[in-house]
Length: 260
Image (tube, rainbow, N blue to C red):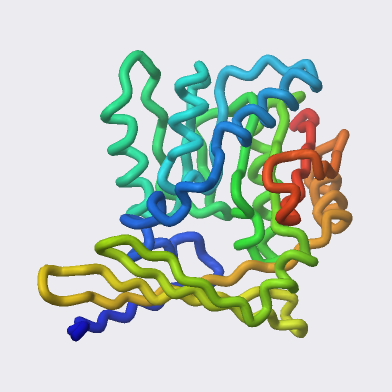
């Protein structure tokens, strides 16, 4: 018989800070993600664009797996995320690494970035930009125009609109010996957004603690994103489908910054 301690945590659905109870098990339930493929893709783009990148901002860095990988490849990292729970895990990863420059961790939302200087390039991985409602996109892009060096590059990916629509009504279960996650999704045609909730069960001795999170990802058309980037001061904008997880409908958008 399962005895459950019930805990509901509801946070702003359009904020990356909703990663609270999920944070301790995030890496376990995403162990199939090949972050090295993302890192290889970024470096391929840097080379194609002829960019020498030393300082690199990871926006929506989560638990810092990609941040750590890029740091091990020699980049000086700035890592920003609005979830303090996810950043704590990211910091623990770096405590185990040697001979790298520790990143600057910033607990900031994507729309409130405030760096201490500029960076050569910015990356944003695994559809973090989908978490921003359309009204927040212009301000976010203007901030990156401010903090990326002229000539620097911005690379991010999104879940395609088709992918988000296809997840309507989808449910899944992930589990290990001490954790279970029930995932369910509903797509709103009126709002052009995918609402999904997660029930997390964590073993606590003889008991199971239940916590809940609700998230929302907004459907963004690549052409609309390109227009917003152009208006914010970016140029040379490309939409790419040759990156990691392209078979899942992941789209990459690449933009070069202009003078401030």
